[in-house]
Image (cartoon, rainbow, N blue to C red):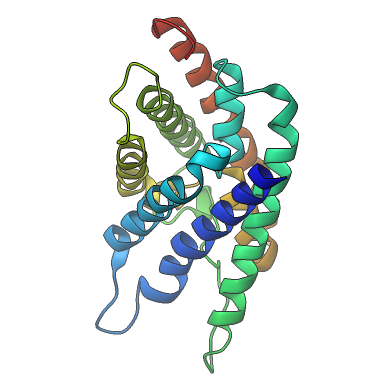
Length: 228
């Protein structure tokens, strides 16, 4: 149960930190952190989460990552479903904490609540196809970075930095396209509070990251000198 709890807390932190930066700070009057700040917020939550919980659970905090590591032969399949459940529940709790904080300001409007979207709900108005390609590609590279950074032949102690900066770069590329998911738990959590269109488009942000992670697991399994 310790590793499941670690995944729960780590995913809670990711959603609270990343989505919290988007909801509370991105456009704050005169001091808004913008896309760059939000990108770094997501990267920093993963980086800090890995160093806090990586030695307990591996620091996945993302159903797509767990799935990709399983496909790549680096994660035991018996833990896959419990990890995904813990991650989704942790994300929902993180979004719930953010909701309680955000609604403490008079006049707060929920809006999209940092939900992911495509088509008319894409921040930049990108098409379904463009968003599909983006999410698959970004998740593919994210899982490839994780598999490479945690390989036994890679210098030890630096994986969290590579993974955190990798997620930051992914957000810098794709926030205008989909608001960046690459993580079904991150998408599910705010969508449950936003409702409406965010719920109706949620299928997309569960399927596309899993496809990208699956491809990454297969490709890295072929490329790597061994599965460890």
